[in-house]
Length: 405
Image (cartoon, rainbow, N blue to C red; front, side, top):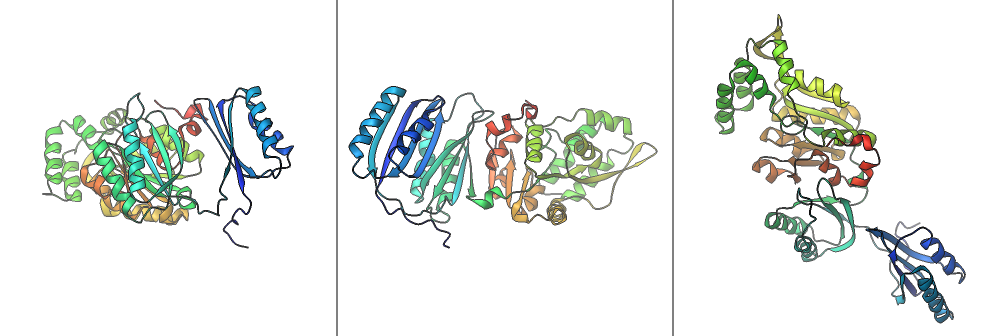
């Protein structure tokens, strides 16, 4: 048996119904069509602000077209709807959409400007694509839409969407359509400035009274004068003598990124494995693992003797290469192919992890990371990443307990 559906052999008639929605309209229409012993070849129904649009492709009612048209007119009057009835060409078996373009709008109460959406659709058309369907994913905390696209030339769509993103300040993600997109099963996040709003070493430095010295080392590392491990060890030495009580005080000041709980709870409901891989410290990530119900948490371990930091890091330092290795090991442990993994991060030490994942997301990231990642999210809500995975806001709202802002 062929996997491709056979082409329609008969001439089809298209019934289009629109108007204020209420229960029973679709049933009444199908009951009417059944009186003519007609078969439904295709049907689509959507609601936009409680306005129904229903389209039904049916067999040509041989010899009964005029009578059916009259009955449909009567149906329209009775239901207070607009109804059209016209022939359409037979449709061959078509391949599904090959790509999904996800548009994340602005962090405002207003929707996307019509000109912004026009730029997206023009870019798709310019790349040779045809939009199969447009789906609203969210109106809050950002406006998000999904365009299912077929027929684009390889590489041209990405180029076109990059131009639209740059010109209009929109986050635009392109993902393969079909089963590959729906198969993601593992999400691994960076912690500092990703899962949380803070940098934990800065919180510890505030307790130790060495914020300025730590900042100087950080700036030298960002300028390329120090590698990550050297910079980390130098900063940790400045923390010598910090007590566990001071560490607990620093931990109490950690602020989750808005939407973090919503994001993780929704992923867990969907059956994802969720973990964090951090260049920070286990004292913080172990707490986050317990608090958020994470499956895995990896970070650097600070040496503590007699209730105080010694200024040393125990074991292998979690740098950019180690982050990628830990993602790969986690995927292997869970029996999940890397192609079904998602990595989220903001800094240069996340680059290797983002590159080996099936989908790498730069979250409010440094420019070098945004340029290298598969896609970017530049709104301050972590759960906006759900929209990249095809999850709608309405599906999240099905469980009110998942809202955290």
